[in-house]
Length: 84
Image 1 (cartoon, rainbow, N blue to C red):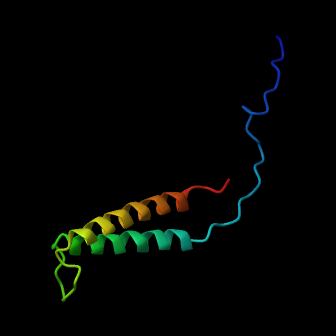
Image 2 (image 1 turned 90 degrees about the vertical axis):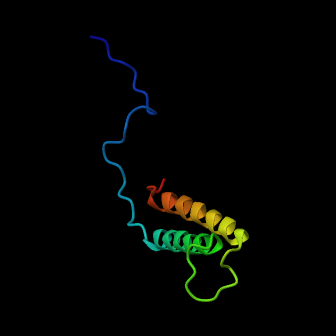
C-alpha cells in the first residue's frame, strides 16, 4: 500500500484551539434592530395604529422598516456565525 501525500488544506486539525465565548450583545442588537423595523413597517402600512404617530400610513416608513428588518436578519446571522 502506498502512502498518500498529506494535503494540509484538506486535513482537519485534530486539536482545534478553543474559541473564547461570544458575547450575546451582537445578537441582542440584531433582534432590537429587526423588531424596530417591524414596528416601523407595520406603522407605515397602517396595520399598527396604537397611539398617534406621524408614521402611521406613511409608505416611506414601511420601506425604512423593511430595510431595518433585513439589516437585523443579516446582523443576526453574522452574530451566530462562529469566529474565524
